[in-house]
Image (tube, rainbow, N blue to C red; front, side, top):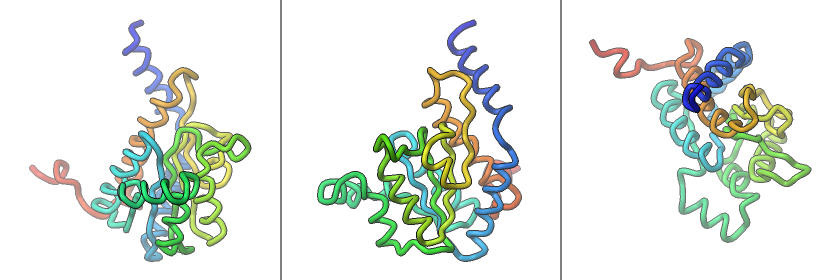
Length: 197
């Protein structure tokens, strides 16, 4: 079997194993955030930051939910990294944004953070603030043992090949959030190509 065929076979296996009940739970949580006038803050690093930016567009435009990604503001991100350190860039951004109980964090990450090994400390401190303030913590991650998966309502992307955890996790972040933004509980506006005849 070619590499491409194997990789796409793995993708099919992952799609078949995703916890769809958990996806539906997150859809309900997002609908609740919108109904309560809350905001969703998408947090991600690296490829997941790119996904966060894309997700903000989709959820604002299609779901009519007020959303933000701190990584979209490069000036503030780099100023905070320079002046305060990388570990606090998200939590301080959220404090300035006055994160409240009606809001939600939506974590997009491969590992989801590991407190003991000091991995993705910026996500961990943001999650801790959200829990302290009563905000929802949602996520799509690739590791069931990570901090996000153990501290929020999270879809864990099934691992079918240890060598491809990162590419499959980041690819399926987009699959799952597109499912969410298309979900009848969440979708509030028609998309152009589906509505044009």
